[in-house]
Length: 295
Image 1: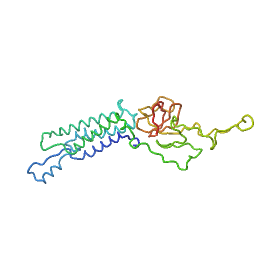
Image 2 (image 1 turned 45 degrees about the vertical axis):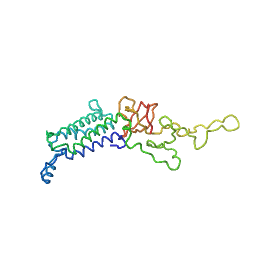
Image 3 (image 1 turned 180 degrees about the vertical axis):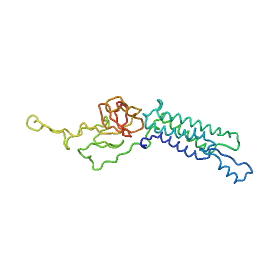
Image 4 (image 1 turned 30 degrees about the horizontal axis):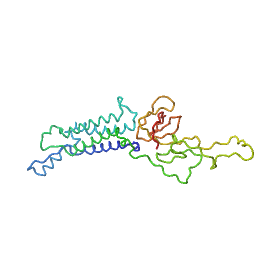
Protein backbone atom coordinates (compact mmCIF):
# COMPACT_ATOMS: atom_id res chain seq x y z
CA UNK A 1 0.00 0.00 0.00
CA UNK A 2 1.38 3.41 -1.00
CA UNK A 3 0.73 5.63 2.01
CA UNK A 4 0.85 8.73 -0.20
CA UNK A 5 -2.27 7.46 -1.97
CA UNK A 6 -4.29 7.63 1.24
CA UNK A 7 -6.77 10.47 1.68
CA UNK A 8 -8.00 12.04 4.89
CA UNK A 9 -11.21 10.05 4.55
CA UNK A 10 -9.19 6.83 4.32
CA UNK A 11 -7.39 7.78 7.54
CA UNK A 12 -10.74 8.24 9.32
CA UNK A 13 -11.87 4.80 8.12
CA UNK A 14 -8.63 3.17 9.30
CA UNK A 15 -8.98 4.79 12.74
CA UNK A 16 -12.46 3.27 13.00
CA UNK A 17 -11.08 -0.15 12.07
CA UNK A 18 -8.40 0.19 14.77
CA UNK A 19 -11.10 0.99 17.34
CA UNK A 20 -12.98 -2.16 16.29
CA UNK A 21 -9.89 -4.33 16.72
CA UNK A 22 -9.30 -2.95 20.22
CA UNK A 23 -12.98 -3.31 21.17
CA UNK A 24 -13.11 -6.94 20.08
CA UNK A 25 -10.75 -7.94 22.92
CA UNK A 26 -12.60 -6.01 25.63
CA UNK A 27 -15.57 -7.23 27.66
CA UNK A 28 -18.67 -7.00 25.52
CA UNK A 29 -21.01 -7.34 28.51
CA UNK A 30 -20.65 -5.66 31.89
CA UNK A 31 -22.11 -6.96 35.16
CA UNK A 32 -22.68 -5.37 38.54
CA UNK A 33 -21.84 -7.37 41.65
CA UNK A 34 -24.91 -8.16 43.77
CA UNK A 35 -25.00 -6.80 47.28
CA UNK A 36 -23.41 -9.13 49.80
CA UNK A 37 -21.30 -11.03 47.23
CA UNK A 38 -17.64 -11.27 48.30
CA UNK A 39 -15.21 -9.23 46.20
CA UNK A 40 -13.19 -12.33 45.28
CA UNK A 41 -16.25 -14.07 43.88
CA UNK A 42 -17.23 -10.90 42.06
CA UNK A 43 -13.81 -10.66 40.38
CA UNK A 44 -14.05 -14.27 39.20
CA UNK A 45 -17.45 -13.56 37.73
CA UNK A 46 -16.11 -10.52 35.86
CA UNK A 47 -13.36 -12.65 34.31
CA UNK A 48 -15.97 -14.99 32.81
CA UNK A 49 -17.79 -12.19 30.97
CA UNK A 50 -17.52 -12.59 27.18
CA UNK A 51 -15.40 -10.51 24.83
CA UNK A 52 -16.21 -9.82 21.21
CA UNK A 53 -14.70 -13.15 20.13
CA UNK A 54 -16.37 -15.33 22.78
CA UNK A 55 -18.79 -18.01 21.70
CA UNK A 56 -21.65 -16.40 23.61
CA UNK A 57 -21.59 -13.39 21.29
CA UNK A 58 -20.19 -15.00 18.13
CA UNK A 59 -23.07 -13.83 15.88
CA UNK A 60 -22.38 -10.29 17.05
CA UNK A 61 -18.68 -10.72 16.32
CA UNK A 62 -19.50 -11.60 12.71
CA UNK A 63 -22.04 -8.81 12.25
CA UNK A 64 -20.04 -6.06 13.96
CA UNK A 65 -16.32 -6.78 14.15
CA UNK A 66 -15.69 -8.90 11.05
CA UNK A 67 -18.12 -6.91 8.90
CA UNK A 68 -16.75 -3.57 10.11
CA UNK A 69 -13.09 -4.44 9.58
CA UNK A 70 -13.84 -5.94 6.16
CA UNK A 71 -15.78 -2.80 5.23
CA UNK A 72 -12.79 -0.61 6.12
CA UNK A 73 -10.47 -2.72 3.97
CA UNK A 74 -12.84 -2.59 0.99
CA UNK A 75 -13.26 1.18 1.30
CA UNK A 76 -9.54 1.95 1.41
CA UNK A 77 -8.51 -0.55 -1.28
CA UNK A 78 -11.47 0.44 -3.46
CA UNK A 79 -10.43 4.09 -3.53
CA UNK A 80 -6.87 3.22 -4.54
CA UNK A 81 -8.07 0.79 -7.24
CA UNK A 82 -11.18 2.47 -8.56
CA UNK A 83 -11.30 0.19 -11.63
CA UNK A 84 -12.10 -2.91 -9.55
CA UNK A 85 -15.80 -3.85 -9.66
CA UNK A 86 -17.97 -6.37 -7.82
CA UNK A 87 -21.37 -6.99 -9.43
CA UNK A 88 -21.13 -3.60 -11.13
CA UNK A 89 -20.26 -1.78 -7.89
CA UNK A 90 -16.87 -0.42 -6.90
CA UNK A 91 -15.17 -1.87 -3.84
CA UNK A 92 -15.65 1.30 -1.81
CA UNK A 93 -19.39 1.26 -2.55
CA UNK A 94 -19.62 -2.32 -1.30
CA UNK A 95 -17.59 -1.36 1.77
CA UNK A 96 -19.83 1.64 2.48
CA UNK A 97 -22.93 -0.56 2.50
CA UNK A 98 -21.19 -3.11 4.70
CA UNK A 99 -20.13 -0.39 7.16
CA UNK A 100 -23.71 0.84 7.51
CA UNK A 101 -24.82 -2.73 8.24
CA UNK A 102 -22.10 -3.11 10.88
CA UNK A 103 -23.16 0.18 12.48
CA UNK A 104 -26.77 -0.98 12.69
CA UNK A 105 -25.68 -4.31 14.21
CA UNK A 106 -23.51 -2.56 16.81
CA UNK A 107 -26.36 -0.24 17.79
CA UNK A 108 -28.72 -3.20 18.11
CA UNK A 109 -26.18 -5.10 20.23
CA UNK A 110 -25.91 -2.19 22.68
CA UNK A 111 -29.68 -1.87 23.03
CA UNK A 112 -30.45 -5.61 22.95
CA UNK A 113 -27.60 -7.55 24.50
CA UNK A 114 -26.78 -10.84 22.73
CA UNK A 115 -27.82 -14.10 24.30
CA UNK A 116 -31.20 -12.86 25.53
CA UNK A 117 -29.78 -11.26 28.66
CA UNK A 118 -31.17 -7.77 28.10
CA UNK A 119 -33.75 -8.24 30.85
CA UNK A 120 -31.11 -8.93 33.49
CA UNK A 121 -30.85 -5.82 35.65
CA UNK A 122 -27.26 -6.56 36.60
CA UNK A 123 -26.05 -6.87 32.98
CA UNK A 124 -25.41 -4.05 30.54
CA UNK A 125 -23.31 -3.24 27.51
CA UNK A 126 -19.62 -3.39 28.33
CA UNK A 127 -16.74 -1.20 27.24
CA UNK A 128 -16.15 -3.39 24.17
CA UNK A 129 -19.71 -2.88 22.95
CA UNK A 130 -19.53 0.91 23.29
CA UNK A 131 -16.15 1.19 21.59
CA UNK A 132 -17.41 -1.12 18.81
CA UNK A 133 -20.36 1.22 18.30
CA UNK A 134 -17.98 4.18 18.10
CA UNK A 135 -15.68 2.35 15.67
CA UNK A 136 -18.47 1.40 13.26
CA UNK A 137 -19.80 4.97 13.45
CA UNK A 138 -16.37 6.35 12.52
CA UNK A 139 -16.01 3.93 9.59
CA UNK A 140 -19.48 4.73 8.23
CA UNK A 141 -18.93 8.47 8.67
CA UNK A 142 -15.57 8.34 6.89
CA UNK A 143 -17.07 6.36 4.01
CA UNK A 144 -20.07 8.65 3.51
CA UNK A 145 -18.47 12.04 4.19
CA UNK A 146 -15.52 11.44 1.86
CA UNK A 147 -17.89 11.52 -1.10
CA UNK A 148 -19.67 14.64 0.17
CA UNK A 149 -16.93 16.85 1.65
CA UNK A 150 -13.96 17.81 -0.61
CA UNK A 151 -11.63 18.21 2.39
CA UNK A 152 -11.88 14.46 3.05
CA UNK A 153 -10.67 13.76 -0.52
CA UNK A 154 -7.39 15.64 0.00
CA UNK A 155 -4.22 13.53 0.27
CA UNK A 156 -3.34 12.60 3.84
CA UNK A 157 0.33 13.61 3.60
CA UNK A 158 0.03 16.16 0.80
CA UNK A 159 2.41 16.36 -2.11
CA UNK A 160 6.05 15.52 -1.40
CA UNK A 161 8.42 18.46 -1.73
CA UNK A 162 11.47 18.34 -3.95
CA UNK A 163 14.61 19.75 -2.30
CA UNK A 164 15.93 23.00 -3.73
CA UNK A 165 18.52 22.65 -6.48
CA UNK A 166 22.09 23.50 -5.54
CA UNK A 167 24.42 25.45 -7.80
CA UNK A 168 21.86 27.76 -9.36
CA UNK A 169 21.43 26.10 -12.77
CA UNK A 170 20.47 22.59 -13.86
CA UNK A 171 22.96 20.55 -15.78
CA UNK A 172 22.81 20.92 -19.54
CA UNK A 173 22.09 18.13 -21.97
CA UNK A 174 19.99 15.86 -19.73
CA UNK A 175 16.29 15.29 -19.55
CA UNK A 176 14.53 16.66 -16.48
CA UNK A 177 13.87 14.02 -13.84
CA UNK A 178 10.47 13.09 -12.52
CA UNK A 179 9.63 15.83 -10.08
CA UNK A 180 7.16 15.89 -7.24
CA UNK A 181 4.12 18.10 -6.81
CA UNK A 182 5.16 21.48 -5.53
CA UNK A 183 8.77 21.09 -6.69
CA UNK A 184 10.45 23.40 -9.23
CA UNK A 185 10.18 22.37 -12.85
CA UNK A 186 13.10 22.90 -15.19
CA UNK A 187 12.41 25.86 -17.42
CA UNK A 188 8.67 25.85 -16.79
CA UNK A 189 6.65 29.02 -16.41
CA UNK A 190 3.37 29.46 -14.47
CA UNK A 191 0.33 29.09 -16.65
CA UNK A 192 1.98 26.98 -19.36
CA UNK A 193 -0.11 23.99 -20.47
CA UNK A 194 1.26 20.69 -19.18
CA UNK A 195 4.62 22.14 -18.13
CA UNK A 196 6.15 22.78 -21.56
CA UNK A 197 9.43 24.66 -21.50
CA UNK A 198 10.12 28.07 -22.97
CA UNK A 199 12.72 28.17 -25.74
CA UNK A 200 16.07 29.30 -24.34
CA UNK A 201 18.77 31.13 -26.31
CA UNK A 202 21.83 28.99 -26.91
CA UNK A 203 24.73 29.40 -24.49
CA UNK A 204 23.62 32.58 -22.73
CA UNK A 205 23.46 34.87 -25.72
CA UNK A 206 20.61 37.05 -26.86
CA UNK A 207 18.68 36.57 -30.04
CA UNK A 208 20.97 36.43 -33.14
CA UNK A 209 21.40 39.80 -34.83
CA UNK A 210 22.15 40.35 -38.51
CA UNK A 211 25.77 41.29 -39.13
CA UNK A 212 26.75 44.77 -40.25
CA UNK A 213 27.52 45.66 -43.80
CA UNK A 214 24.88 44.73 -46.28
CA UNK A 215 21.78 42.61 -46.21
CA UNK A 216 21.73 39.82 -43.72
CA UNK A 217 24.38 37.21 -44.35
CA UNK A 218 23.15 33.65 -44.91
CA UNK A 219 23.23 31.49 -41.84
CA UNK A 220 25.42 28.43 -41.64
CA UNK A 221 23.62 25.29 -42.67
CA UNK A 222 23.17 22.60 -40.01
CA UNK A 223 23.19 25.02 -37.06
CA UNK A 224 21.57 23.32 -34.07
CA UNK A 225 18.24 24.62 -32.81
CA UNK A 226 18.08 26.10 -29.31
CA UNK A 227 17.91 23.37 -26.70
CA UNK A 228 14.70 22.72 -24.77
CA UNK A 229 12.35 24.31 -27.34
CA UNK A 230 9.81 21.50 -27.60
CA UNK A 231 10.77 19.04 -24.86
CA UNK A 232 8.17 17.88 -22.32
CA UNK A 233 8.79 18.26 -18.60
CA UNK A 234 7.04 15.55 -16.54
CA UNK A 235 4.82 16.92 -13.79
CA UNK A 236 2.40 15.72 -11.14
CA UNK A 237 -1.31 16.34 -11.39
CA UNK A 238 -4.65 15.39 -9.84
CA UNK A 239 -8.03 15.00 -11.51
CA UNK A 240 -11.23 16.67 -10.23
CA UNK A 241 -13.32 13.54 -10.86
CA UNK A 242 -12.78 9.88 -11.74
CA UNK A 243 -11.49 9.58 -15.32
CA UNK A 244 -10.49 6.56 -17.42
CA UNK A 245 -6.94 5.88 -18.56
CA UNK A 246 -6.81 4.21 -21.98
CA UNK A 247 -4.12 2.01 -23.52
CA UNK A 248 -1.19 3.72 -25.25
CA UNK A 249 -1.77 1.81 -28.50
CA UNK A 250 -4.78 4.01 -29.30
CA UNK A 251 -7.43 1.39 -28.55
CA UNK A 252 -10.40 1.95 -26.27
CA UNK A 253 -9.13 -0.59 -23.73
CA UNK A 254 -9.17 0.95 -20.26
CA UNK A 255 -6.04 0.15 -18.26
CA UNK A 256 -6.91 2.11 -15.09
CA UNK A 257 -9.16 4.78 -13.65
CA UNK A 258 -7.74 7.94 -12.13
CA UNK A 259 -9.40 8.89 -8.86
CA UNK A 260 -9.56 12.37 -7.30
CA UNK A 261 -7.33 13.10 -4.34
CA UNK A 262 -4.37 11.09 -5.71
CA UNK A 263 -1.30 12.47 -7.48
CA UNK A 264 -0.40 11.00 -10.88
CA UNK A 265 2.63 11.63 -13.06
CA UNK A 266 2.32 13.02 -16.59
CA UNK A 267 5.23 11.57 -18.59
CA UNK A 268 4.37 12.68 -22.14
CA UNK A 269 1.91 14.72 -24.16
CA UNK A 270 0.00 13.61 -27.25
CA UNK A 271 -1.85 16.60 -28.62
CA UNK A 272 -4.40 17.64 -26.00
CA UNK A 273 -4.05 14.27 -24.21
CA UNK A 274 -1.51 13.23 -21.60
CA UNK A 275 0.36 9.99 -21.08
CA UNK A 276 -0.02 9.40 -17.33
CA UNK A 277 1.54 6.92 -14.94
CA UNK A 278 -0.30 5.63 -11.85
CA UNK A 279 1.21 5.02 -8.43
CA UNK A 280 1.57 1.29 -9.17
CA UNK A 281 3.40 1.85 -12.47
CA UNK A 282 0.56 1.45 -14.99
CA UNK A 283 0.67 3.86 -17.96
CA UNK A 284 -2.02 5.03 -20.30
CA UNK A 285 -3.52 7.98 -22.15
CA UNK A 286 -5.70 10.49 -20.31
CA UNK A 287 -7.92 11.95 -23.02
CA UNK A 288 -9.93 14.34 -20.82
CA UNK A 289 -7.48 16.83 -19.29
CA UNK A 290 -9.98 19.55 -18.45
CA UNK A 291 -9.81 20.93 -14.92
CA UNK A 292 -6.76 18.97 -13.81
CA UNK A 293 -4.78 20.36 -10.87
CA UNK A 294 -1.03 20.59 -11.34
CA UNK A 295 1.27 19.86 -8.43
